[in-house]
Image 1: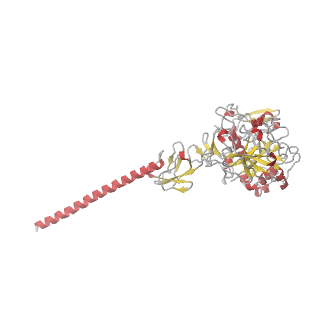
Image 2 (image 1 turned 180 degrees about the vertical axis):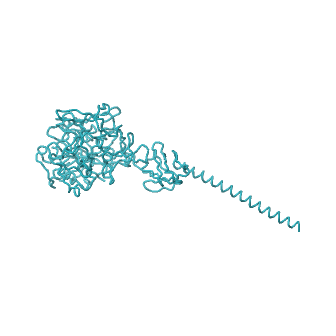
Image 3 (image 1 turned 120 degrees about the vertical axis):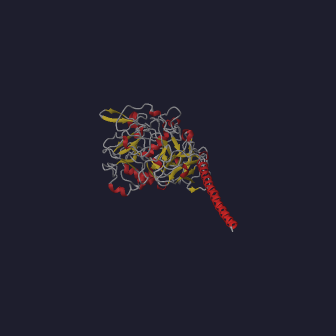
Length: 560
């Protein structure tokens, strides 16, 4: 019996030992498995996103679950896109209030900030594939109905080309894309590639401004309320331009989100949001219509059959006027109409192409591109666009007598060659459909423009087609600028009296720099023949919106 009892006790002890040993082994395997899993997870995380920088308060990097999308599609593999393969980052979004930014230089996620509550969080990086072959990164020209791609050669001769032709444009070589619309009589004419198009067959010329972001360059971010001595070197400062269709974002390091109104239809007057000097910001001119670029009238709008500029005042819109619109060289600029009439003409010219009267930010987009390596700048300096000083307000002239068909006229082009835009300096004063708000910053100040309050429910209902500025009694209060509109960012400013009238000038080529006030709440740009030496592509001044000879407008197409 004792032996049997001892044997049972031994068996029992053995079984207990086996259970203990099994538990120890199992626990060891579990711990090892967890360690292996976490190591593998961290390895996968590192392999997928290369580098994870920054500190995460209250939790470590192993608590970040990283995911990514390409062109909006969630990806399941672990190989994220390479920058060299033509990808860009559109956005970074994290759950539970966690914030992070993407660093394009190191191609990594960094600056992760926790709100102190999240312990596990998912961050998604949105990548987008772009076409980099043309250098425009997706912002290639988009032709609308009736538009024909052309190249303009010696003495302004026009030749048809094709959309996929390498000779159509090359922005790095300062060759901008051009297109024409034929007259009603010629619209059925067939032109072979490389065939010359007769000038008599052309109704209008347009030049493509690709969507771009620019590097904010003004140390004061346009926040000028007083005058000082001019920065003589600023006129030679090239503005850095980066073509591309993706909007800049606060979530990408070195970028900022463009300040826009709630509807996304207008840039915000006086606002910077998180933007600061040195950062890249998508130009607001392209955001209102959500387009990859804008077709800008190559010349000031002209009047078909006119024997002089603005001979007859036209302060009430008529559809018959649309047949008179031409955008061509050697034409008398359309003038002597108030802002409302010009607005209606622009809006109804080619509504299927979202035609409209030019806005101040769109003017800013053109001249920022001009003041870059893609326009009038090289590695050392920027040349000034020569003014059109033709006393009859004829389009396409350079100086007083040099007509467009004379090769020397390219001195008045935004590129210094025939592919650029003309009449941006001098010619007729160009009216912008950009206006100051009333003292409550609620509604536009109509003044003598022809607009009335009820137009807010009709012509002015769609805010994409005009823009507004904050109220101020001083026309030298540049803090109201919209970033990108080429007003406040052109400081510092100086002032001088011409007779008894006070004038302000910007640091860029000493051009006019008067903004808005209650008496003159509308913006006009470029100067005119009568502006003496103060005309220029950067020139800005104010007026009351009334009709006058020598005041014209420019048509822009927002083709999607």
